[in-house]
Image (cartoon, rainbow, N blue to C red):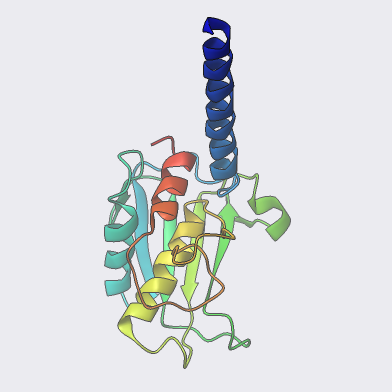
Length: 186
């Protein structure tokens, strides 16, 4: 009787340990191993366009983790430069894009996942479908998530980082918060 109880306990413990380890692996897959060298004191500066969207970026991502600090001014070399609702893009199905630089050199898409960058340029394009303030905020916040090294997840529905649809909400889903904390160690 005692042996059965011990075996049952060990089996349950083993299954729970495997589930926790799998959960950690799944979360790790939701962000790039590369990124800014530090997420402390990242300057978010509006180069062109709607500066109020920068405020949304700072308010949404800057309140998730004590390890991520987004400011309007900084002496940091790490910067998110935004071009919000100011440029057009040839493909009407593309609402935004983030491109990355390290020491003034553009990183290729193939190198972004594992490289360090010091500037991320986020674009939220002028587009007939991005026609409300909330949709513009959604795209700006989504692109800033890429600047913070987050990828598109396959699930869950509703995550700001999901990316294949245009949403009009601007609050982060639990997935988004967990991915940011996972990347920047809470």
